[in-house]
Length: 256
Image (cartoon, rainbow, N blue to C red; front, side, top):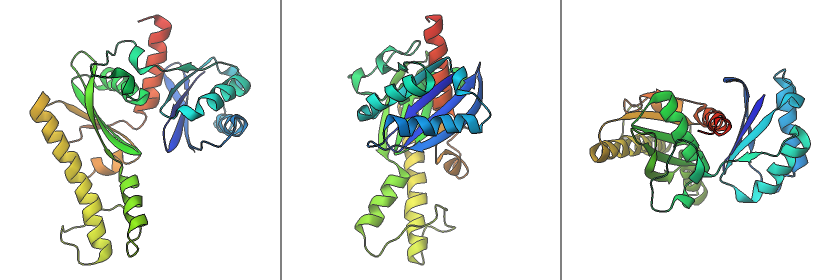
């Protein structure tokens, strides 16, 4: 069994693979102060709940954009899974050249997504990841990472709005039937949902104008929601990052 961990600013996504089959996937809150034991016990409990055996873990591979968790993650992998984890270096992902000005600045998850998107959907393509940030990443016809764009995530932007406006409150993420809001809830849904749809559609139009029309793949927590309400998304791949970690691990093992 291969265990994969994608450590993001808000959540840690965990996946268990047997060969190329994803046998289970789980999410934990990212908490800087949590100990390796707390994380380890949670992950082992998830594995057991899925009917799998943590002792059968043969390797662990990790992508992370949260450096303060590096020690805790290493320790939990060694103590609870029996392996020192393979840590993704975004500048050294087999099969994916990072063609930007400062390759050391790109998040490991974005390069992993590029590897997975190219293998699963072909290239050129654009990956939209609806996470803490909404990221747009361009993958070339050769499978290389060529850059992208970063915008505030839907959840983050909404929480900031509510936190700084005393008369506004959380609303359900549902597109209203009309742009012109007739109540505070209606107006917020218009601005949040239709506004974000316009962001996504406008950015994809600009990408297509600049690099040519290509496949658009969406992943992340809000991918399915947005795909229902726009025609610019060609495919939703909910487990893209987890699959990408498996793909990268297989490439590392093959030395390709």
